[in-house]
Length: 154
Image 1: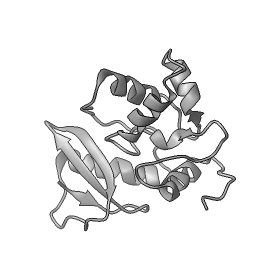
Image 2: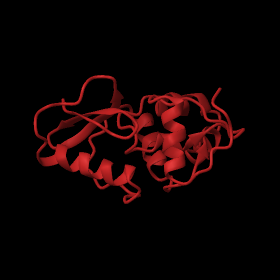
Image 3: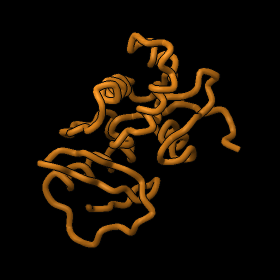
């Protein structure tokens, strides 16, 4: 699986049948082989995003998860660039306000970080909470999108 460099660290890209199935931050070294086809397209769109030129990704996804997880990921994908919502509001939108923890677990299982913008989900109190890529990256992604994070992570 190819690994690319980004401003927030190295990113592993995994495709299946030309569709993105996994995108995650990694400590593994950047791949040496040249990138071609869909992998190069993923890299280009990520570079455009990190440079502030792209607000919406246009990549084919093949999400693997339960029906509930997929419904959460679909709802997360509808959160506009530069905006946030809370776990509570997301669970309410899905018609199950008591499912806050289940929504959080589904978000934590997001296989395609950055592309499915789970970094846009914050705690009800406005605090940054959980992110598979780490809270510093979550804060950096939100700031990149123009969302002023007004709290210390420590």
